[in-house]
Length: 196
Image (cartoon, rainbow, N blue to C red; front, side, top):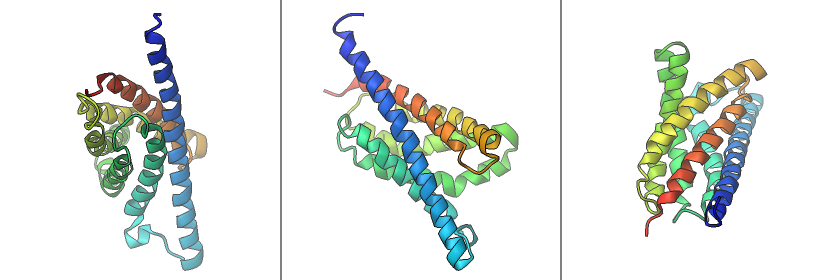
């Protein structure tokens, strides 16, 4: 290990830990807020957002906003105009929450779950790439990285949710940890290609 490589390795390790924490906490806060909104509406009005056809959009805004803000805190020092990351993440989550269930129901079993995760990754990756492209060469690779990351992390979250929490949704936290780890590692590779 050379003296020149040490700062980069420390940077990458620190960033990876921060990214995993931000992604996990962002998901946990967003999911908790979604559960609270649903419980309040159910208690006071005896209806749910799903009955109004709004569940996916509201869930997408809340989850995307929460995760986007948490990740922005980590990216803010490293990516130019990183504030757009929040909007990019909201857009990706809304697209998937509104359309993703159709894929899972159209394709049975594990393949449907993997495709839903890959759709989430692509839906996040495209608008997030536009943010990363301002500061990094070959930022378009993020679309593929994000697609693969969530194509793995989403099925892990689904399996964890079924095994650990009997389908309550809280087990997806494990998927968020995996998504944070894979996504953070992918971003450290991307950060090697900073624009002049």
